[in-house]
Length: 225
Picture (cartoon, rainbow, N blue to C red):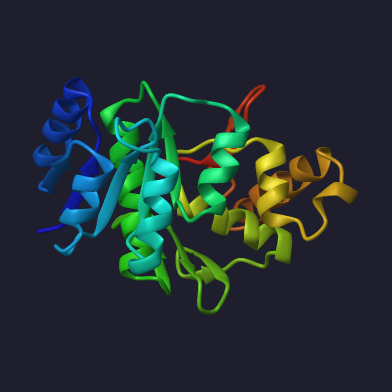
């Protein structure tokens, strides 16, 4: 059974997460404070859900202490939606973040995406029935067993989407994660890459489109393909 540690002091959020995770077969342990959470890490957890606004110390500080001893994946739970918080969290070692209020379905999708990536780091399956497969070792994307002919930027964009299926990335986030020199590129370059990715899939299936577009927000990989 996959064991997850939740470090969160709000009872309502604790209950919501516990019901959602246990219904999916996960084992959840709960810590009320950062200190208690750090003490519980003597156990072996597959993933940690960490609130930023803890009563005894910042979740940022807790993550720094976790990273001194453990490589366990961490998802930040935050009521703050500022870009500075997101960037800081990822820079100090968080694997993902989710902004409150969030749906149990969204949280479960984020958890599954990270567990797929960390438990089998060389081969990520979108899902058991998916037409798409990615090999991080070979840096290749397969569609129905056939290799897609992708440029480096197209592959890296798909790799980013695979890590967080269902999550929508802004053009700026895609460029920051994919482009070698994002400051020298234009936002519309992302649109061109997305258009090219779609074209690569349509070479094999004219009706297939794995990319979700949200007007005014950005792009991502559809949760169900």
